[in-house]
Length: 260
Ligand SMILES: [Zn+2]
Image (cartoon, rainbow, N blue to C red; front, side):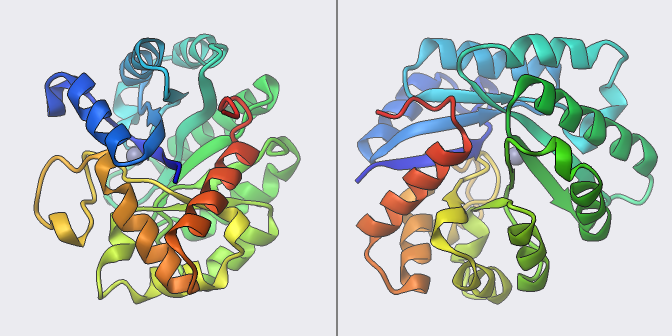
């Protein structure tokens, strides 16, 4: 069974040497990991990690809650990183209206500019969207013609109705530890309603531990089998077939993942 974590942040500062971490993930069947940047420095780190480890790929991008660090010229640095052979997408980018003092206009501007960058580079995007469903959907509609290389909403947390709109727009989804909790009925209904070829697994490590690691920091890509088994249960299928579907979906969207 080949497993993939399509979205995580595995920084040395949280884990010490990540070699041991990646070996343990591999022992659990997690053969590929997409390490995701959230600003220029973390995107550079993710690229360096992907150069060191065979099964590690990365995303480069500026996260909406990190924009106080944003400086003009940073998107040129993201562009240079994204030209790397192992950069599978621009991300994570998007909107996060959780904190009331945020500059929503700047968020929308940088989100849109990174969508245009992805289009130029013929890459898909990994989207973070929190408390901002309406504006996210509006941007997905407005920039539909620039999202032809695909997009994925990570840790999807909205209703099945919003999911349907994203699905109709051609979007992919990934789910993490939050879907393993007995209280997460909305995520379970969404997974049940989505076609299997649009759904992927992620951990968002070091955050969002699954139920078996409740309260434990850091979460790790070793949580993927637990998340996968919840998705398989919801669909009433075996973990093996769910793993194949996730693997296929990831390789369909992220074309720079090597097929092996
Ligand atoms: Zn993330």
